[in-house]
Length: 167
Image (cartoon, rainbow, N blue to C red):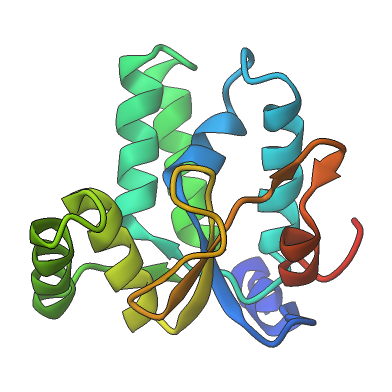
Protein backbone atom coordinates (compact mmCIF):
# COMPACT_ATOMS: atom_id res chain seq x y z
CA UNK A 1 0.00 0.00 0.00
CA UNK A 2 1.41 3.47 -0.87
CA UNK A 3 2.53 5.62 2.07
CA UNK A 4 -0.24 8.14 1.43
CA UNK A 5 -2.93 5.46 1.65
CA UNK A 6 -1.40 4.04 4.84
CA UNK A 7 -1.48 7.48 6.44
CA UNK A 8 -5.11 7.99 5.53
CA UNK A 9 -6.23 4.60 6.86
CA UNK A 10 -4.22 5.04 10.06
CA UNK A 11 -5.94 8.32 10.96
CA UNK A 12 -8.26 8.50 13.89
CA UNK A 13 -9.65 11.36 15.90
CA UNK A 14 -10.19 10.80 19.58
CA UNK A 15 -12.42 13.88 19.68
CA UNK A 16 -14.52 12.52 16.81
CA UNK A 17 -14.36 15.88 15.06
CA UNK A 18 -12.81 16.86 11.80
CA UNK A 19 -10.84 20.08 12.05
CA UNK A 20 -8.60 22.31 9.99
CA UNK A 21 -5.57 24.53 10.50
CA UNK A 22 -5.38 28.22 9.65
CA UNK A 23 -2.56 29.66 7.59
CA UNK A 24 -0.87 31.10 10.69
CA UNK A 25 -0.18 27.60 12.06
CA UNK A 26 1.46 26.58 8.77
CA UNK A 27 3.52 29.79 8.63
CA UNK A 28 4.66 29.56 12.28
CA UNK A 29 5.94 26.03 11.65
CA UNK A 30 8.49 27.44 9.19
CA UNK A 31 9.22 30.79 10.84
CA UNK A 32 12.52 30.69 12.73
CA UNK A 33 11.56 33.94 14.46
CA UNK A 34 8.29 32.61 15.87
CA UNK A 35 9.84 31.31 19.10
CA UNK A 36 7.67 28.97 21.13
CA UNK A 37 4.86 29.30 18.58
CA UNK A 38 7.09 27.62 16.01
CA UNK A 39 7.59 24.55 18.20
CA UNK A 40 3.88 24.45 19.06
CA UNK A 41 2.93 24.76 15.37
CA UNK A 42 5.31 21.96 14.40
CA UNK A 43 3.69 19.76 17.06
CA UNK A 44 0.18 20.71 15.94
CA UNK A 45 0.88 19.82 12.30
CA UNK A 46 2.60 16.53 13.16
CA UNK A 47 -0.27 15.46 15.39
CA UNK A 48 -2.95 16.77 13.01
CA UNK A 49 -1.53 14.55 10.27
CA UNK A 50 -2.57 11.56 12.41
CA UNK A 51 -6.09 12.84 13.01
CA UNK A 52 -9.11 13.79 10.92
CA UNK A 53 -7.67 17.09 9.78
CA UNK A 54 -8.37 18.58 6.37
CA UNK A 55 -6.47 21.60 5.10
CA UNK A 56 -8.03 24.16 2.82
CA UNK A 57 -6.38 24.87 -0.48
CA UNK A 58 -6.62 28.53 0.56
CA UNK A 59 -4.49 27.98 3.71
CA UNK A 60 -1.79 26.14 1.77
CA UNK A 61 -1.78 28.81 -0.95
CA UNK A 62 -1.59 31.60 1.62
CA UNK A 63 1.29 29.78 3.35
CA UNK A 64 3.27 29.74 0.10
CA UNK A 65 2.54 33.41 -0.55
CA UNK A 66 3.57 34.49 2.98
CA UNK A 67 6.68 32.27 3.02
CA UNK A 68 7.78 33.76 -0.30
CA UNK A 69 6.94 37.38 0.59
CA UNK A 70 8.61 37.24 4.03
CA UNK A 71 11.57 35.15 2.82
CA UNK A 72 10.90 32.56 5.52
CA UNK A 73 12.64 29.97 3.39
CA UNK A 74 13.90 29.58 -0.17
CA UNK A 75 10.97 29.67 -2.57
CA UNK A 76 11.65 26.14 -3.88
CA UNK A 77 11.57 24.80 -0.30
CA UNK A 78 8.31 26.66 0.40
CA UNK A 79 6.80 25.14 -2.75
CA UNK A 80 8.03 21.68 -1.74
CA UNK A 81 6.52 22.10 1.74
CA UNK A 82 3.18 23.20 0.29
CA UNK A 83 3.26 20.22 -2.05
CA UNK A 84 3.99 17.88 0.86
CA UNK A 85 0.94 19.17 2.73
CA UNK A 86 -1.17 18.71 -0.41
CA UNK A 87 -0.14 15.05 -0.34
CA UNK A 88 -0.38 14.54 3.43
CA UNK A 89 -3.81 16.01 4.21
CA UNK A 90 -7.26 15.80 2.66
CA UNK A 91 -7.77 19.11 0.83
CA UNK A 92 -10.92 21.25 0.87
CA UNK A 93 -11.39 23.51 -2.11
CA UNK A 94 -13.51 26.64 -2.45
CA UNK A 95 -17.00 26.33 -3.87
CA UNK A 96 -19.37 29.00 -5.15
CA UNK A 97 -21.54 28.58 -2.05
CA UNK A 98 -18.53 29.07 0.24
CA UNK A 99 -17.59 32.24 -1.65
CA UNK A 100 -21.15 33.53 -1.30
CA UNK A 101 -21.17 32.75 2.42
CA UNK A 102 -17.84 34.59 2.81
CA UNK A 103 -19.23 37.61 0.97
CA UNK A 104 -22.25 37.69 3.30
CA UNK A 105 -20.03 37.30 6.38
CA UNK A 106 -17.79 40.13 5.23
CA UNK A 107 -20.69 42.45 4.37
CA UNK A 108 -22.17 41.75 7.84
CA UNK A 109 -18.83 42.82 9.36
CA UNK A 110 -18.29 39.48 11.11
CA UNK A 111 -14.93 38.58 9.51
CA UNK A 112 -12.71 39.54 6.62
CA UNK A 113 -13.68 37.98 3.32
CA UNK A 114 -10.64 35.67 3.43
CA UNK A 115 -11.30 34.41 6.97
CA UNK A 116 -14.96 33.92 6.08
CA UNK A 117 -13.97 31.97 2.99
CA UNK A 118 -11.63 29.77 5.00
CA UNK A 119 -14.37 28.99 7.55
CA UNK A 120 -17.10 28.42 4.96
CA UNK A 121 -14.82 26.07 3.00
CA UNK A 122 -13.89 24.21 6.21
CA UNK A 123 -17.59 23.89 7.11
CA UNK A 124 -18.38 22.39 3.71
CA UNK A 125 -15.53 19.90 4.27
CA UNK A 126 -17.17 18.77 7.51
CA UNK A 127 -14.79 20.55 9.89
CA UNK A 128 -16.22 21.31 13.32
CA UNK A 129 -13.22 23.40 14.41
CA UNK A 130 -10.28 25.45 13.18
CA UNK A 131 -7.01 25.92 15.03
CA UNK A 132 -6.03 29.58 14.69
CA UNK A 133 -4.96 32.54 16.78
CA UNK A 134 -6.31 35.07 14.28
CA UNK A 135 -10.01 34.85 15.18
CA UNK A 136 -12.01 35.07 18.41
CA UNK A 137 -11.30 31.95 20.48
CA UNK A 138 -14.50 30.05 21.30
CA UNK A 139 -16.62 31.76 18.64
CA UNK A 140 -18.58 29.71 16.13
CA UNK A 141 -19.13 30.88 12.57
CA UNK A 142 -20.47 28.87 9.65
CA UNK A 143 -20.75 26.06 12.20
CA UNK A 144 -16.97 26.00 12.77
CA UNK A 145 -15.63 26.54 16.29
CA UNK A 146 -12.56 28.77 16.57
CA UNK A 147 -9.84 27.30 18.81
CA UNK A 148 -6.69 29.18 19.72
CA UNK A 149 -4.13 26.38 20.07
CA UNK A 150 -1.58 28.43 22.00
CA UNK A 151 -1.50 28.54 25.79
CA UNK A 152 1.12 29.96 28.14
CA UNK A 153 2.61 26.53 28.73
CA UNK A 154 2.20 24.70 25.42
CA UNK A 155 -1.05 23.87 23.68
CA UNK A 156 -4.49 24.88 24.90
CA UNK A 157 -6.71 22.17 26.45
CA UNK A 158 -9.14 22.35 23.52
CA UNK A 159 -6.29 21.96 21.01
CA UNK A 160 -5.02 18.97 23.01
CA UNK A 161 -8.49 17.42 22.83
CA UNK A 162 -8.73 17.87 19.07
CA UNK A 163 -5.22 16.51 18.60
CA UNK A 164 -5.92 13.41 20.67
CA UNK A 165 -4.39 14.26 24.04
CA UNK A 166 -0.81 15.14 25.02
CA UNK A 167 1.76 14.41 22.33
